Structure formats: structure tokens, C-alpha cells
Length: 208
Length: 208
Image 1 (cartoon, helix red, strand yellow):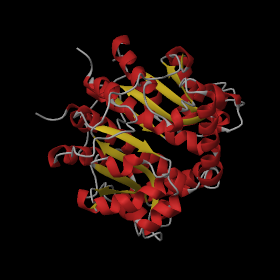
Image 2 (cartoon, one colour):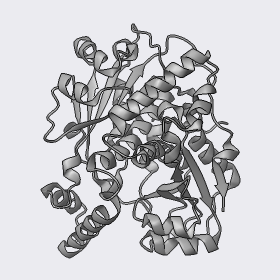
Image 3 (cartoon, rainbow over the protein chains, first blue to last red):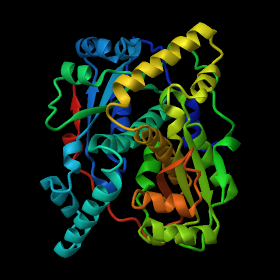
């Protein structure tokens, strides 16, 4: 029997043409959002938020900011994944709150925060912004959203093709806290998926 | 019946203590690597590579570069996910080759490359390096690796806690092509998973 996750991953493709008349049920949408909710993030930071758009009006204003792609308006739902880069700042109150949830002794929490600070300052921030780093975590939830959807026969289209500032403007994003990381459209395909194209597996795997 | 992907996501936790005597079978490892292989990436770039480490010797030299975390040596396998940032350069020969695989007419391929170039130059590179951008894609494959593993009862620990240059040195990474994006340890848990901690789902989801 095929592994159920592989089966879902095989069903998944970047769906470009959705059937605008088919809507995702609440039960399935709840599963998809649960997948986002329980996704892991580095240091358990959960510096993300998920805007779940089903309003035709909102989709219509969003579409031109997303290269005018028809997926935005044809899909049943569009999820805009926001990151919260400011929360990654080691001196932000949120770090203390977030790490404190583990219920460790105060000394251990302090040591953990110091470790986080050192890591961010020596390894992460010299190479990328808090926005880019938080966005990486958002892509974990993006993957889990797509896989959970696929396991229920829901198609998705992950979308990087948008103008970030325009999207933030039409969605009235509070930029003092949020930035748009990635968008994903969800619904039912209007035509069969094309054959998958991948480089040979041998070219991307090396055993040591 | 619980959705099989949610079931896998519920099984998944950041496993800190692996049973060093339990090894992942070839069949399950192949499923996990298939998940990585068929993962999507922005523009279908597949600018990644997966080093699959089972050698005790390699794990031993890798461990100090990863905060000396015992997961590295106790886990059955460690996968080091490399990105290939140079390939994201719109003028790189790879872009032409990669986009050409779709079998579109030459004009359509050229227009697609121009669109890619414009997007990278106006939206991506002003905000992050090719390394950060490619790393985001790597996190999609990371998520799919973890979920597929979990669906087979395999535990994982995603690891950002490493010193990138040190890891690249001990693994003899050809830095003209590759950079380490993230590490994941895989094996069997040595003790039960702790309760999951997450912020309330209401705090991370908004419906529009």
C-alpha cells in the first residue's frame, strides 16, 4: 500500500485552473488550518499568522496584486501567510513569553534565551533579515497546508508571484507587526494535472 | 477517521533523544527521500540537494558543528539539506535549462525567464539573498520529509542549531555551488513525546 503522505504529495501539483463553483467544506478547511497550527517553527517561535480569505470581494481586490493570476479569484479559499519578523528580535518581550511557556526553571529559560540571542546574532542575522528567517518557517506551514489539503482531494497553488507591498496595502496589513511571506490558493482543479517534471532523484541525493 | 496527514503531524515532535540502536529501513528511507524529491519549489527551481548521512564516522565529525547535539550521533540518519543559490541567478545557464524542460515554445520560455528575472530583481533580491530564498524552498522539502517520516512512525528533529561554515567544512561542501540550509535528524524516539505547546489557534487565524 502506498504511504498516505506520498499519495497526497503525488496528488498535489501547482493547480493553475480552479473550478470556481466548488467550495472547500468547513471540516476540511479546519483540518488544513490545524496542519498550519501544529506545524513546527525554529525555536518554537510561531511568528506567523494565517489570513483565510473566502470573500469574493477581498479576492477581487487581491488579484491584481498577485500578477492578476486567476487562481486568486477562482479558488475556493486563499490563505495569505504572514510572518511577524519583529517577534524574532531576541530582546522582544515575546521571546521571554514564548520561551517561558515551556515551564522550565527561570535560569534554564534565561540560558535558552541567551542561546537564541547568540544564534540569531552570529548565524542568522549576518545572513538574512528577520523577515526572511520567519518566512522560512512559514514555508514549513505552507508545505503542511498543501499536503493536508491534497490528502483530502483539495488542490493548491503556492504563490510567490505577488507584489508584496501591494498585497499588504489591499489587505490593510498592520506593517508594524506583520509582513506577507507567501500566498496559497486552495480549491478544486478544473482540469487534470499535467505530468510532474523533476530532475532525476540521483542528481539531488548523495549518501554518506 | 482522522486525516492521515494530521495523524502524522500529531505524531511529529522535535525528538531530542533517539534510540541509537534502531535504524530506519531502506523502504521507509526511500519514501522519505521521494517526499523530498517531489516537493515543490518556487518556479520549479529544485535548487537543492540532500546529503543522507548514515555513517557513524561522518555523524561524529558533524556533531560538534551542530552545538554538539546528541541527535546527530544517536539518530539513525541525518539529512543535510543544501541549497544551490547560484542557480537562482536569472542569467545562469541552469534557468534556461530548467524552464526549457516544460517543452513550451521558445518564445514562451523566453517570456517566462524574463518574468522570473523581473520578479527576482524587483521583489526577491531587494529583500533577501539567493541563499535565503533558496532556503525557504528547502523548508518545504524539510516539512515533507518530517511528515512522511512521521506517517511511518519515524521521529525527526529539524535542526537550525549549527554553525553553517563549520558544517560546510566538515562535510567538504563545494561552496562554489552549495550552501547548507538546514539539517534534520531521523530515527526512533527513546522516550515519549512531551505535550505539544502552541498558541491558541484563534490567535493565529483570521477569516476574511
